[in-house]
Length: 183
Figure 1 (cartoon, rainbow, N blue to C red):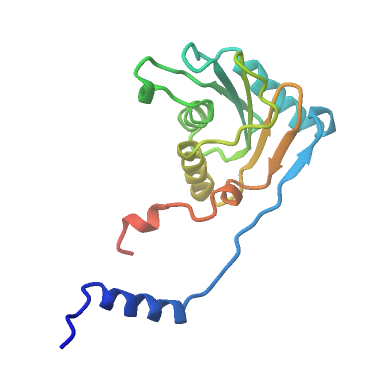
Figure 2 (cartoon, rainbow, N blue to C red):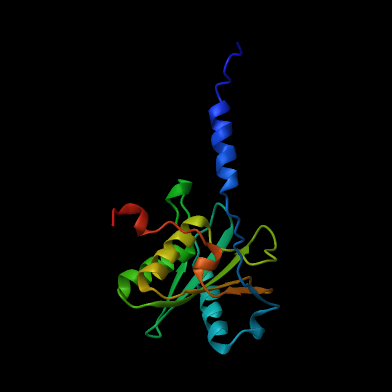
């Protein structure tokens, strides 16, 4: 009599799943501009405000400075810059500084767009840096709460600019409040 293989049941289960598997491709449209001059006047101004905010970054450890500017539905622009700390996890990214400030200063006012610009004193940053996972999650929470898209502009001081129509484009399987409730 053959000895049963301990993982044989798992293999059968896995085979069963593959028969019912559905494959989907998730993609999005990303606009790539050669430089800031190709943007609309409003987008240029927002990115310039992010660039100015980058000058306020506190990045003595990474030497990687990031500025963010958030355009609100009421026309106000709120800025933020990354703020590092010797205890690395205690720092905060520019995007979250700006978005959280906007939420605190203008509660209930929808965010239209977030512009982000990054540079380093150690090397040339040739392509725009996208928001980190924590920033993506924070921004998508506002997008879900306001039930409207937040466009994202990502740039470097003297180079290309990327633009996507919604944070959900670059975080398509976002965690949301529905996972936290029974209803």
